[in-house]
Image (cartoon, rainbow, N blue to C red; front, side, top):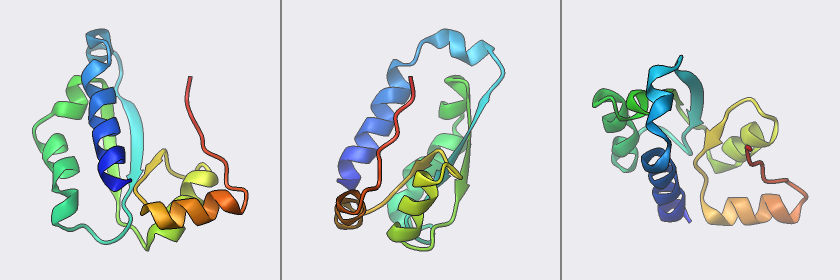
Amino acid sequence: MKKNLFLTFWVVLLVLPDHFSTAQAEKITLKLNWVPGGDHCFYYAAIENGFYKAKGLEVIIERGQGSGDTVKRVELNTVDVGLADSGTLAVARSKGAQSRSSG
């Protein structure tokens, strides 16, 4: 699941139209599943290399306090995007958590 979220996040960024890069940057908050570690390096590298900025995004990364907390924060709309393990997400969905999508 984590690999799928990562790939989806990058695919979306790669296919966004280039006209977003000239507009005001949209602020996006990414909540990690836990403390920053090696498995999160891609998100930080994308910020450092300007990949998000080139697509019109200003990504702010928040430290996580566990996947459960991250799922709750996404559900409550206090963050835009969150990383969570698939087990925690499945349990949350079985208890009524709703997925969000923009558009």
